Length: 403
Image (tube, rainbow, N blue to C red; front, side):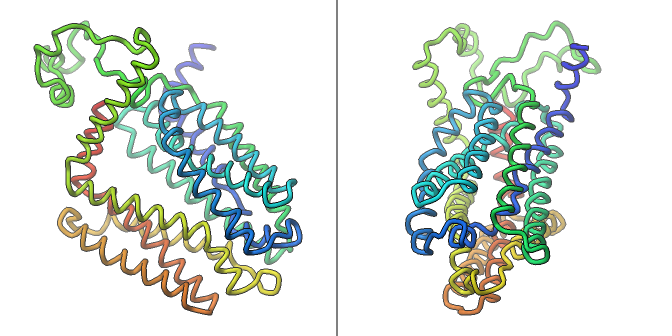
């Protein structure tokens, strides 16, 4: 029985299934589009100024402060403990949302939600440590698709419960708490990875006792191109065995990891095109997160939730659906993004800027909704184009698949 269980957990299908279940319940948050109406409503009795100036900014700064330490911690503890930490942070976030009151309590909510978003790196990096490279594209598609489906279902469900069933925002948050609790339980069933990108990397291949099946002896013993590029000097490789992580002191090992990280960053960003796309990615994601953080405040200002119908859930559902459609259609557009990527970057970034001006200066809630739909669809489209860029893929593939 134990052998069968070990064999089951070593396949790519089992961890992918559990991770998809985790991603579905993690993104199944029907209360999220109604956060601002909930905070400014009778449940919390906060003013719009308190929400805008004292509560929502905490998420931005906590996310920024936690991102790099959590990234290193994620690699050091090999992903699964960080996914459990994310599940605990989700549960604490919604327990505070349900039962705590006051500005300080809601600031704690934003801090823990900053922890949730900072630990998302573990979700997208975990699967690459437990499956072989031949399954990367498939499992990436599964994991990203299930999160989009869950976000769409959650937004539609939340809107239907509010508009048709008259469910209160408090009960929507209770449903969300149940969903994130299921995600936390799913994380326990994930197998523990044996390697990671930096702290637990496997640089040296294990000795091959004989030729691989179906290959001549020369091919079986020939090092891969990645290994040749990593260690071009045979004399340097033969100089002596490299110290293992377990034999080096913790401080020395941490220093070696940081040096390796610096070398990998210099290697990856030696491409000017990849550097341009990465800078855009960082700036655009920062702007998108700010829009996502404050757009409900704008909607509530244009159409106050206490006196108008709220369609936040419907708008989020449509925006997620349009984003998934645009990212899916990119693969059928036969364009050389190496040549026309910067042009697309400029055009769609200008469209996004126009949408922001439209939402700011328009007094119509429907214009704000339309601007947000176009803004999010263009943002996701550009992210997909960045991923499809040939040079970026070549550089990142060399970095991640040839550790």
